Image (cartoon, rainbow, N blue to C red; front, top):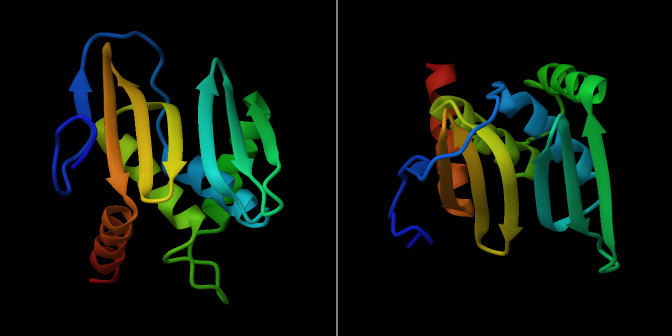
Length: 158
């Protein structure tokens, strides 16, 4: 069961009021962040949006805590890199962190939400965002994310 009481493949859930600007196209940015992090062998990933920046923390294989931040033009560069990585030959991205974050980004885009924070635990990801003037949150089990990703790939292939 999800922390907010939802079960199954439900979308992001709305609660409360909040404010903020709503950029879209999180799928490309989060895919690129995931691609960068995959090279680090991360665990316990956390991503936070603050102002015009996106900041990530993760646990490296040696158990040290690492971080990286992107602002303004760097975020646009990440979007472009994410677009270039679409359908890259020679790798099966279907279960990696980049694909999982891309799928989360697609869910945020579908909900019209702006990412505020993403936290990974061994079973999944907890996402908090803003949609219009409302806070949204959702816990995705890794299996749910992989299922959503598989469904989207099948739709694109059809």
